[in-house]
Image (cartoon, rainbow, N blue to C red; front, side, top):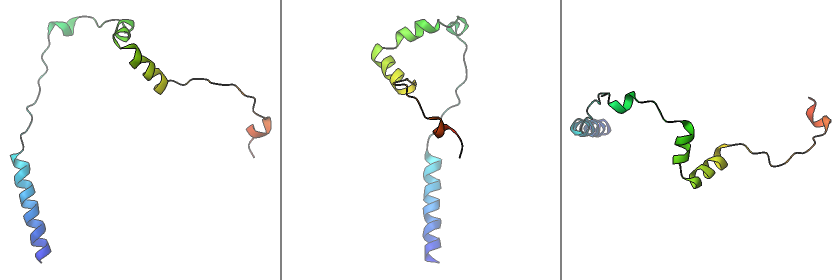
Length: 79
C-alpha cells in the first residue's frame, strides 16, 4: 500500500504544479491593411531566399537524374 500512497502524492504534486503553469492567452485575428494587399509574385519571394539556401533546398528535396542505364528485360518480368 505504500507504493500507492507514493504514487498518489506524486500525482497530487504534479497536478499542483500543472495548475501553477501560465495559460497562454487566446490570440485573436486582427485584420490589417497589409492583409488586404495582393501577395507578391512567387519569383519575387524566391529571390528573397539566399542563393546558398536555395541550392541546399534543391539538393535535399529535388530528384536528379545522375545516370541512365539499360536494365535487362529478364529483371523486369515478374517471376
